[in-house]
Length: 188
Image (cartoon, rainbow, N blue to C red; front, side, top):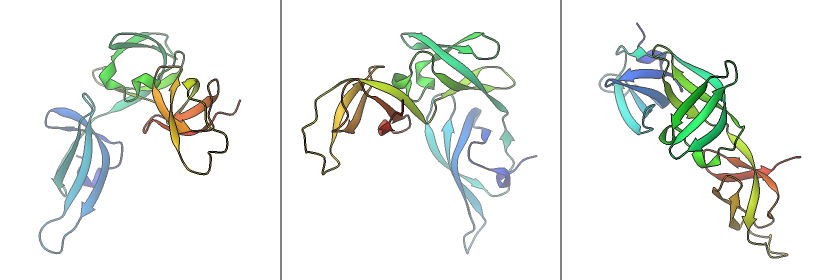
């Protein structure tokens, strides 16, 4: 049976009758007392992040999950609809299961994480960066590029992203989905 020695980032475990993914962990061996594992775990159903300490060597239940590529089709309110790239079946996912839902563009490919035993969707994993077109931003002032000043820009999905002053409406940019930060201009 697996123990805390098997911890690794991204591992899914059953804890307190729920499914959790290990975000980060650290084995600690203090000079006095028993060893323990300090972890940061994320709930796969509602996205809560919790810090927890496990006693070293305690048995854990590992949950088997599968990542499957799906294409984003459309949304109607809080339900987002995806189509499997392999079987062409459609799946509906709640908005709270998607970390950066307002950066989703129709036709974009994402990974849906499924619980292998129950075939239920646990989470929608966005790519690290997405390429989006800037639909509106204030014009930048000429010569005002010496500082790292940012301005707000609205992208084609309706999300607001902070971009450098030289970015103008109509340009395609790459946006980091984890931080909503401008990454770079997209190469055509």
